[in-house]
Image (cartoon, rainbow, N blue to C red; front, side):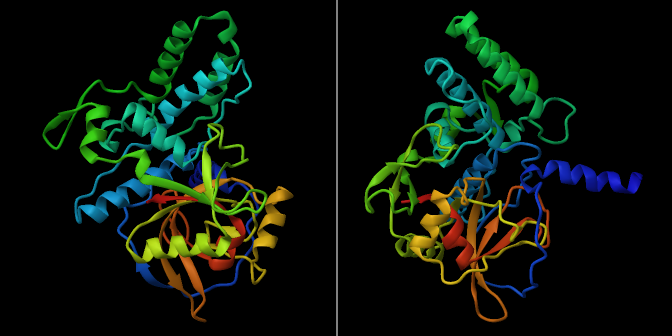
Length: 343
């Protein structure tokens, strides 16, 4: 029985993978172009893929401008600050806004602008003695705290929230040393010169006019942010042009399909071609959902010359390709909800 314990722990850590995976046809993949990227991290038992994908995107953008100079950002610092933003939203909406793990790329960029960012070395975001992230109990406590807000003034409410996050995730350092210099979260973000306005979120749906922004109607868009709407072919062209220019993309989409397999390192779609109408049909019937974010870092082809996107996941070095995944063009066209990339 003891031999099964490591496998059990791994399966529990990969919370987003807790569903049936179909045995997919084996393929031989040959990368075409792979942009500079950092190694995959493990989000553990949290639904915080959005911060891992977004941090990885900015890390690659840094590498593109500073070859060989790797910077690792703290995903969990952004999660912590996002929880505080959600608690504020719950308070001001009189409980209409839900307390949840989820977020999107703009959640990361909002924290970057308002609260700065920390390097991974300065903030791991785990309670002392813990080896992996698990926000199951924390989320329950945050919800309980939010529900009690009617008995508490806002300053006292936020003070209790900060104390809870300090206990469960660790206190944020007032300042820290990084490469021999002292920084705060704000000054470190300023030194990297990342700005939210330099990034754009794109999508492709026909229930809103093309070439206009609209508030994307998915649960993780709890901040009600706008996405610019493009025809599907043009959305894919933008992504391909970015990758060919060495710029990576944060991908947001549906991974509930049994043909999405992190274990096998593939995401395949059985229907071809995927049209705008087919894509819309899936979305309007809630067959395409906003489950996950990953970091799109390159392109590849298989033994038959078919095109694939190469993505970096946030389950650590899990699966056939040590944390990477090959997504078919048809899966991308059918199941992408949105993308985030540098303008």
